[in-house]
Image (cartoon, rainbow, N blue to C red; front, side, top):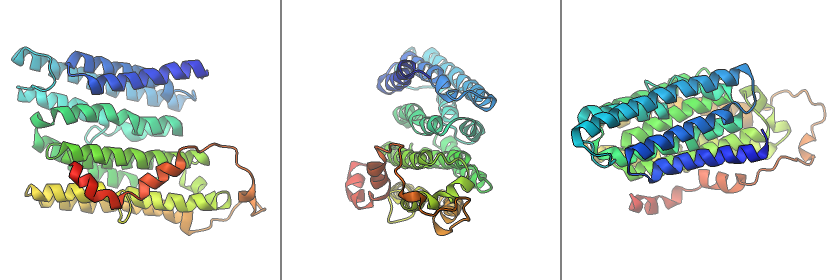
Length: 347
């Protein structure tokens, strides 16, 4: 793709998301979603092959269905309240339809089937955009309509998402699919807290985006798409294998890393609201995620797989790929736990 075209498309994607985030009028929000969806499709098909074509078609169909549902919910709300303002959702059916549409856009269970399929069919760069930037717009709308969301519906979706995200990733060797299931589980944690403390959801989203960006950038450094290619990394980048180890543990939510903050605070917030069983189940389901992250760390950093390369000094060669943002991203993805008291004040 030529750079000017790429710049225009990326600008449209960003503009679409910004319009969604900054609008208080349902029609503008819907237009922002549509702009974003139509502009991301060429990014998904950047490296053109049948898999990418199939992935883009699946993405388009699910997002178009979600947009239609959202518009339907908005129209029902308009008929009952007579206004397009986002803050007032007077009809429970409209609220349920909007929530369903937005969870469909995010890939929460039971609408999660497209996420691993689409992520697997596209390049690592496109996958990174899909699992980070594309989550911002629907989350910002859920944040704004959080007072009128049906809590029981969202809690059920959240719990099933955490379970699906854990179970689905267990048998995977493809890194993009693992990241997709990890994304479903993280979205579940965010959905669980949104009706009780929306600000905490933003904290979780920020940390999730930082950790996912760092992980994808490390994968892109070596163009790794499978566990096997990742297991040969010790031969090229001994230091990066340990970075992946720390990042995976952070994604799994282990203290003393950044990934522990959202899990700790969400469980604390839910128990404050007299919920014991759901956070317990979510914490147990998070162990499934931790298992497949640990499997990745084992094959990457804890074992030295036999290498086809006879010369073991390959890591001393100059490397040409630029990794500009990696150091700050890795630091923020792993070392933010001491800031928890400050972050809890924000909530």
